[in-house]
Image (cartoon, rainbow, N blue to C red; front, side):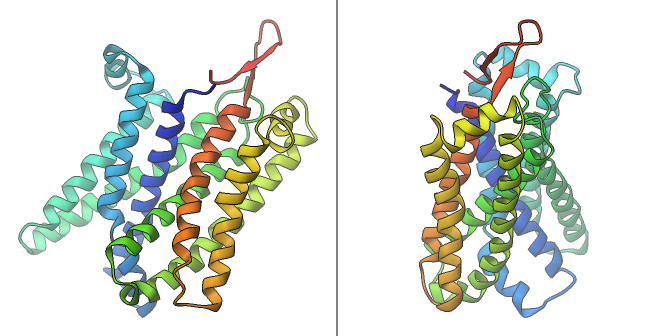
Length: 299
């Protein structure tokens, strides 16, 4: 069985960074332009400025738990290395630090100097958030001995999933903490953007699976997802919760703008994002360069 810690780490880091990225893009854009639709979106997305760092920080806890021993945790940060694991770990620390400082500075005196410092910190945090979003997919695709994951479409899928789950978290948070009438215009904008992200994720996932099913040894992993032992997790979790339910609720809300069913789709998208990480890790098999035999990638 796959180690739960690494799956939760990839999920939380992606979702948190995705939520922050969406929030930061809206906030930074509003500093220069103030169209009504962008101001409406901000009523939903502004929570990402603190939800994002908190969620990514929790993901880092799962990473350290996965490493097992304290000395191994310190080695990740203090051993000179350019490995993706080391770079990703430092990127998470830098992201959480910069975003927290931006919030702190933003709460101090409203002076031109403070505003410039806050802006610089927020830009840095956004850049680190992009790295964190891209990191997990690139890390998983960097193993030549794991053919199913060693594909350029894997980082694309994980990036789109991070944005979708991040938006889902923002929509759920807005539903819980804000009056429905206040956020209704912003929800409409966010659902349209999220609909595009979900459509792209569905297309990319379908292309990856179609390619894998016609290739060997990638077919072993793809078949385990489509018709094999992980088919339930894939069809119910990845496809059902992560794609079908969010898409259906967004179409419903497009016809009925004041419907609250969007929160069901947002929650389902979050569940689907977690299922995606588990499904890919469980289905991936590693081939020994010595014996040529296949073994579980993560056990």
